[in-house]
Image 1 (tube, rainbow, N blue to C red):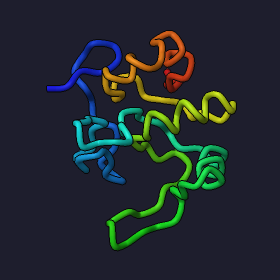
Image 2 (cartoon, one colour):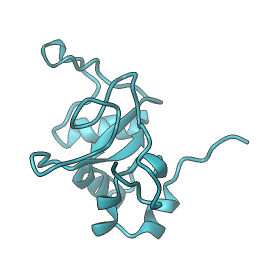
Image 3 (cartoon, rainbow, N blue to C red):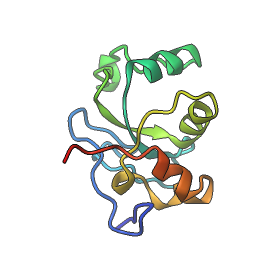
Length: 122
């Protein structure tokens, strides 16, 4: 089983909509996953607009690929490179650390990731 950035077992990101390179709800990866869909994010309207302007419209449904289109509040396994790009532009969405693949820490410092961790209501 894959590990998350905190060293624990990789937890599901989303089953509705179903996400991940393998479409199993996990931000797991393999050599065929060129985009490294390893960062579990919580979508915001601002990020969806940023992503569309950067050439990746995640809001529009694509039925032929069973893609429902995303809206604010949806969790999704995002390509690591797009998250880094958004972070540098000040547009990065919050992330779910327990659902981000350990490999992310090879490219992004864990302390930076923690700054974007979802703030859970207690």
